[in-house]
Image (cartoon, one colour):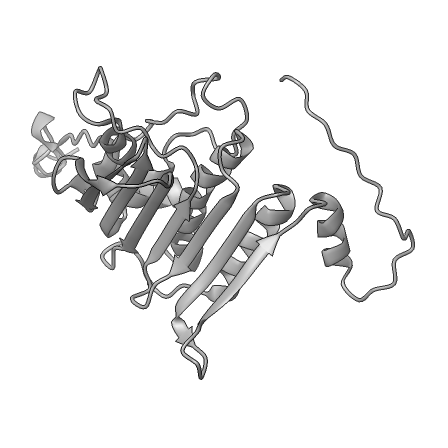
Length: 261
């Protein structure tokens, strides 16, 4: 190797060039590692991550109603009637548990077998990943007779969790606006989300999932809304998939149960 090539190969590469990205910064730098891509699929995956948290509350027996709203600005608002994300001070982090859940990759209650014996997602990057990839996100928690909120931008909290009122309800609402710096498109497809919510209602019988599109209104000013609910679960799902085709077996064969492991 010539002296000139040696100089070119060694220039500008020292300890200062090594970047150690952690948590939310890494999500924003490499979003496809977390949500698959930054196109249409990745955009819709943000919704699935938030809804999965509500589904986990339902699987644990603490939630039976989930609302998903596409806002006029192509944002998303997901609400449930679960227990509400805890807001007390986290012993290790020294801030509200809500802030930890929303801003720390790998934080969540799903790693605790006593908190969630059954869970649809265990990687712990869900809602914090959504937060990192959103220009704005607001979390509202109704818990133990009080209402709490915190807002964020690109994964960073704008203020500490604060109490804003009282409530007889319980549950969590997460509203977010995807970041145009990250995604190739910001327009949600209603049918794509409807298909997903319909499937979730079949796979989690007894849960009511409502999808509303505030971008669309009829002549009376009502928004496009569908409600998905199944009492027979997978049996209903098979019937739906069969559609208008003539069934060879009239009664769908299905079994259900629960076991450890």
